[in-house]
Length: 255
Ligand code: ADP
Ligand code: MG
Image (cartoon, rainbow, N blue to C red):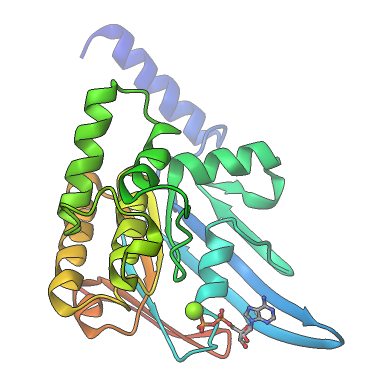
């Protein structure tokens, strides 16, 4: 070790000792503290989340399962910064989400989060190819040719080769879902949130989608959080969170 390295090491250790800098430990990607969400429906209050405490580390492959109405979609919307909690705190990359400006929030969503919506949310006037291309163009300034290669490869990986020029109204539910999945994955974000991503897929296509997700998780350490009822998807997860009436009733890590 050269003397400069030695000096820096000594300096770091002494600062740590004095507690002036934090020890380098792996930072949680996501932290929720006592998160509550109450929807107001006229005069009626609907409590969808009743105090969620949750920490997710980078690289986790987590499923959220629970009966319909248990709060899965609400929870994913909060994590994805699409909606704000009524109470409690959410931190992404150690930054408090409520402190971010609208622009910072938009940037966080654009660069760090891929979202697969239960209702797909595709742009109706764009083709399957253009829906995926649009997402990647916002963040990737590679050449035209490189972008085209990436988009076509991604669409082929989710089994949509040959359907690139179809618009959403010319695609089945399962095909639309695969476009939505390709759109989220093509950005290679740090965190992918997916709301029942295989719900409208047959078992072969569901297996294909899960394979891509696992590959991204292994190779790029992408963190996945998805709600599902699908035993095939659950089988591959390494963490299981059970949600009931807006509360976490079980949280188990495996493998
Ligand atoms: P899940 O995804 O597990 O089916 P949701 O998060 O969609 O559950 O819903 C949780 C609860 O919140 C349900 O009781 C649902 O009716 C209610 N809810 C969800 N969205 C709204 C909304 N926009 N307005 C009022 N109530 C809502
Ligand atoms: Mg839902």
